[in-house]
Amino acid sequence: MLVAGDSDDVESIRALLATLPSGAYGQVFIESDERAPRVDLRPPARVAVTYLAASESRPHHGGTEPTTTATGTLLADAVASWIEEWMPHEPHLDRIISIWVGGRHNAPLNELCRTLPTPPGRL
Image 1 (cartoon, rainbow, N blue to C red):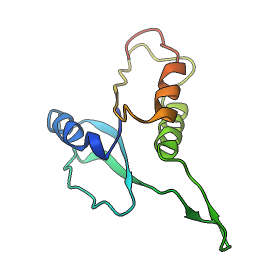
Image 2: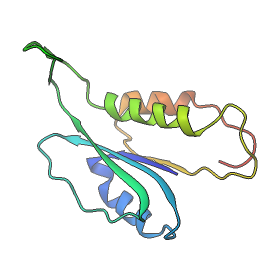
Image 3: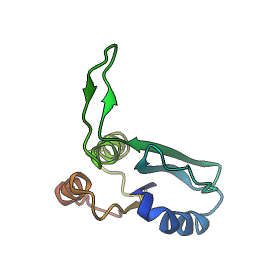
């Protein structure tokens, strides 16, 4: 399963995680301002939570020049990478993949979701 959202979605993500069975496995991505405190979500043991620190500028590798990262880009990139890894081009009809995406004000994420194909079988 994949759960993705921003700091506005934390309570919804917390509620969703509380409904999961103990054997669930997957990934949660949360993008928030790098100064925002991390929240304790208590997911099942096989569900990883990754916090993505949004920032208007980031240090450039090995240099002092800042590079700009638009808010929402990190979350959209993380979701796209997860989909590439976990959703094969030839789906297994006996495998159930659940995806919950928040971030309704996240333009890059909304565009990504509009372009996702609907695979045959169950999603």
